[in-house]
Amino acid sequence: MIFTQDYPQAIIFDLDGTLVDSVPDLCRALNEALSDLCLQLNQTPLQVSNDQVRLWVGNGSHTLIERALLGLDVSLEYVDRVHGYFLTRYEACVCEESYLYPGVLALLTACQQKKLPMALVTNKPIAFVPALLNKLGISEFFEILLGGDSLSEKKPSALPLLHAAQHLSVEPSKCLMVGDSEADRASAKNAAVPCVLLEQGYNQGKDLSQLHPEWLLKDIKSLLVTLCPR
Image (cartoon, rainbow, N blue to C red; front, side):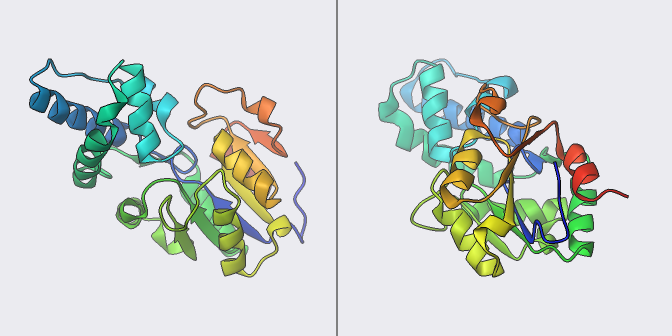
């Protein structure tokens, strides 16, 4: 992995699975939403585990609910209802147990010192993003925040990355996308943005090497050592 004085000129980060392990709070909210549904249907409560949720995260909250119901063999006719319950529940616990991956604060600080503009592009609904970043103490690092509902399209579309690059006044080819999933890789490829994928995150059980990112690293700490060597 080679970075030069001319590259990258900006960095676009994914959020969940890349900077933050948010699964504990997502799992809690999902289980509470499922309990709400089962209570209405007078059925035995259904529960999911953190490990299951890790395989379902990455394509937005609505897809998370779809995958959960499919995994529990529950009719998809309840998707919208459970999704509504989930959004309410998640708002109440958005950053109770979520935490930054080791090395994140050091990486963001180093990039800031190098005067690299940074953007955050996530498929999480934008309403939850500022509170999460504020609680974790990293909101100051980003010049633009884009959620899954900020634009007419979300990842894997190229639109969010192109919008972020334009906002940062940097050509897409001079940006670096840092993510952990197939959606991140596809979005970067569609936008012609070089991409590094991290194995630490939420990859839906896929072999990230098969997605052929420009770079594949173990975790954020590996990126810190490579991008900002001492």
